[in-house]
Figure 1 (cartoon, one colour):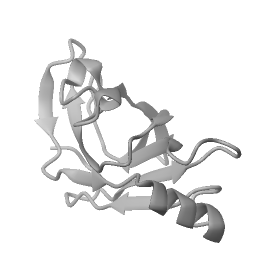
Figure 2 (cartoon, one colour):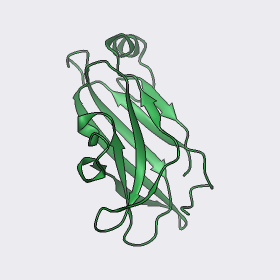
Figure 3 (spheres, one colour):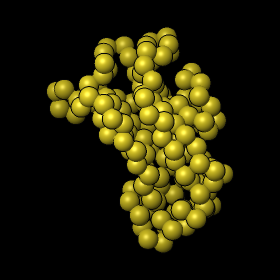
Length: 138
């Protein structure tokens, strides 16, 4: 998998812990496969791919796919972990991303990013890298 990023955006006037997390990763799948965002937080399926966030695919050029997904909610401030899973049409896992990423949505981070205007609009950015093979699945 190619570089992956999760961007944290706090809506104006929302409580400090209310955010939209936007995830994106370039990854080539074969026809019929999809990417699911799965993690330790219940909004990410509590590690159950059938309850995870189904990602949407966009073509970037002729040989790249960009997968995006988002999760909104009031995160309690405790860090959580996530991974990407490649699934088939029946939601069977074909492949797990090798790396587990950690996201910290602490109120202090949100307050700081609102004051400084961190990356990603009205919030801060949390980024992770997925080492791999230039975006081509395998």
